[in-house]
Length: 166
Image 1 (cartoon, rainbow, N blue to C red):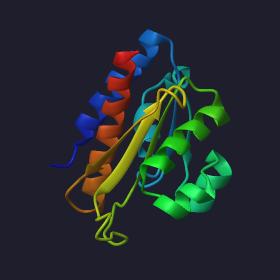
Image 2: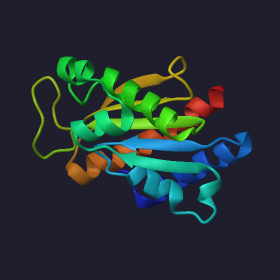
Image 3: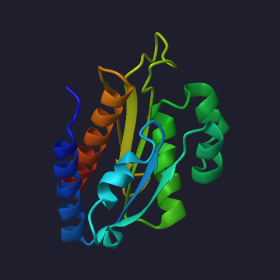
Image 4: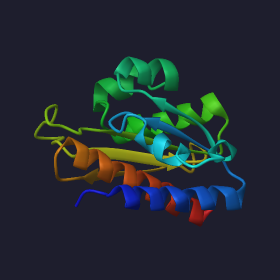
């Protein structure tokens, strides 16, 4: 089921409240969601208190030059993989000094999927350091918009859950 605008807003509000409570800041490193997570977080006035920025690294070249993703990770695992999203988190933290980062890379469709990574495959990572980074893969159903909406919601909820553990 695709995430509604209301669900996205609620998840963004919950993450914002947690960031404010902890006095933490966040940065996004997004590929298939195209900056949508950062958009949800910055829809509220005053979000500059907890949002450092967002990097949309859609191409492999952008992932490498802006986030330091390695040739080895891209070559051996592809852009939609655990090693890449982990490196995206590390690069976003290093580039911005935020307290926590979230990274997303996936196949939103309608094309681009494979047997190994079908449309709807999305890797996520969030963390406050290389040592604390968590990564998970999800397989969403639906068209491009539905996959992206579900990915944005999952990312927001995932970072909130990560922060609750800290």
